[in-house]
Length: 445
Image 1 (cartoon, rainbow, N blue to C red):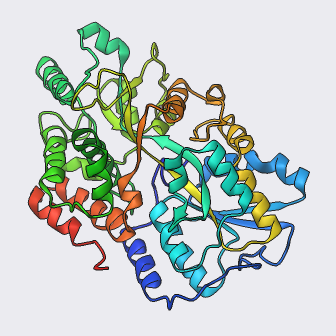
Image 2 (image 1 turned 90 degrees about the vertical axis):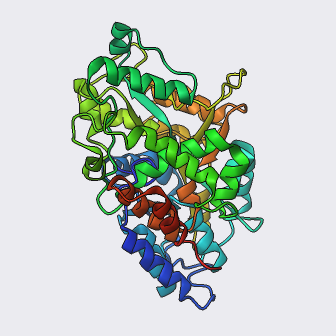
């Protein structure tokens, strides 16, 4: 069960670099727009090719989610997954062999393709669905220079801290309501147990480092607010800014402290070599008492043999704010995908419209393991209690939501120097050097 924004087990930094070079080398002329797509099904009105990062069991469920619609509409959707998506989508577009549709895990990458005239604007029906069923914020992730190129697909809510309710009750540990409270809880558990409470894993094959970016993003948003977060995403506020360094320092106070990590796996440096899914086993066994990961992680925990419920083996609370708001409104980060089209054939548009609808969202979510920010989604269709909670957060107008910053940044930074920087950081490179290295990844123009 692997997806890019929920699992992010994808292309290497080198692959992203290759994508950047391919895109930079484009002359600006369109690749495969208007009626052909260039995919294997591009010349067949009854075949629509879809390319994305969703693989394994989740790819099977994706295909199951649209199977009935395919039959009813006499359209064959042919899905292809790739762990080299970010590099290959650029190569295919430049070479005239793009798929009909692509499921972009990064709004920044979709914007790159749109500004180079590889994508076609979304049809009116997709725009209408986006306006009716998605918040203005989510609509914006598929909009480039005022033109809508796609609607969102699935989503995740990040920033959950996973723990054992029974263990907390036995020891009298309380769920913290502030970031300082989380640090105090960490110190309390370490002092009372004599062992590190946190398990952390940055390992994700060629994508190693991405879980660390999630930590930083959660703290930037909660500590400095939406304006700073938004300016950071566009580099109006650079990584070297004191506000961003403060977020690194706060995260360091937990994950770079050898008294607090790495439960069940080793020292601080073991973070970089611990696969991000492995701590689920440590949580289930009780070797790890705290773990920071997104809503999708319940699947890993269930696979490890534990139940996920408020009264079950493992449950989760959101990373707390730096200051309590008093109104109970949540501030969260998350991710998702956007469906963009490389041709405007009738069959391609029909599939794109369906994937933007609440009918598809309910079909897929009811099959388990994922959520969507589509307002037409029934939260009760979610396959677990934590996913239901995540959907409610996304649908609550009071929730302050921001998309994963690294996915909004240019790939040379977000999945390039940022990922690499997180790897180097846990291996001992000092914070100032790390921030300078990450910032150096920003394109000059």
